[in-house]
Amino acid sequence: MEETLDPALLKPIEKVARFLETGDDSFLTAFAKKGVVIIENFEPHIFEGDDAVERWSKVIKSWHIKPLNLVHTFGEIHDLNVGEDLAFVSLATHWTGLRGGNPFKEDGGWAFVLVKEESEWKVRGYGWAVIHDEEG
Image (cartoon, rainbow, N blue to C red; front, side):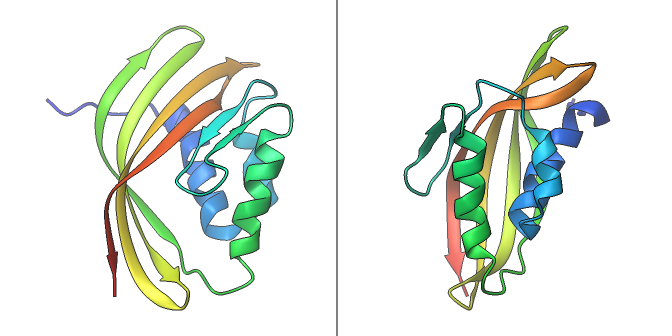
């Protein structure tokens, strides 16, 4: 039986994906107020500390000086554990877009730790792992 994700849990994850697609700072409300750790496949690979989101978002926004045409789709949920104020979710994610002006497709797994802040789920941390990358 395939697990389904509560829309309240998906909301901050969707905001992170939309920030990656657009560079729009309004989506950064997805992140927790403190203790955020982001693990990425681009340098410096680990973003942590009080300015983790700021440093990570600066890298993302630097990509948006050229057309990216980034589009994501979420796939299967591979792991889901939801407590009262803490949740873990791992889900397949597919990206398409432009890298250096060339089309690419990227499949990976996104693992999120979510915390509840003021009755709303927020991203406390995530790790991204590419499992397939294709140019053209």
